[in-house]
Amino acid sequence: MTKIDPINKRILRELTRDGRISNLELADRVGLSPSACLRRVQELERTGVISGYRAVLNPAALGVGFVAYIGVGLGEHTKAAQEGFERALQRAPEVVECHNITGTIEYLLRVECADLPAYKTFHTDVLGTLPHVTSITSYVVMGSPKDMRA
Image (cartoon, rainbow, N blue to C red; front, side, top):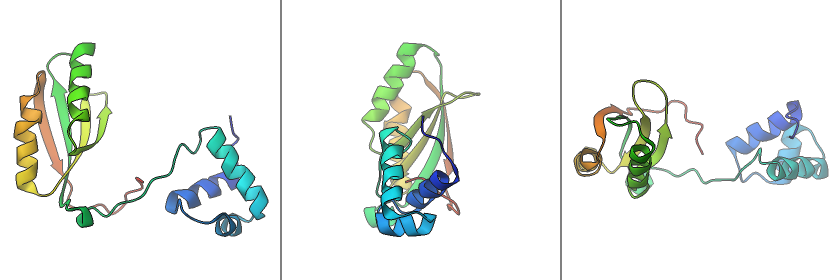
């Protein structure tokens, strides 16, 4: 396991902010030589601390104007019911995150659609038709003052 010392923490913070930063700029920001910085980044990648890099997309440029988190409760708590629900969501492009959680519901989804009518269609034609779904609670995102997802 890679030691996450203060320098590695700074490297990870900078890469989280900008995954395309050059090694030269990254080294300058964290106070290392470029070769030492590159060795640390490669070690963080090799050990799986850094599991990949992603592009941060502009939802409005992609026609996404509606975001909601949805709590979903299932009527059956069997492995088959969960696997069936998860398979169905793999086919739903509106679902960009699906988390199996503890508490009064089984799943928390992040759904992105063009607008409210598109969400209503998803809610009715996808979630509303899945077996074992007994509750759907929508939380509409009105703004995101902090969003560290990449």
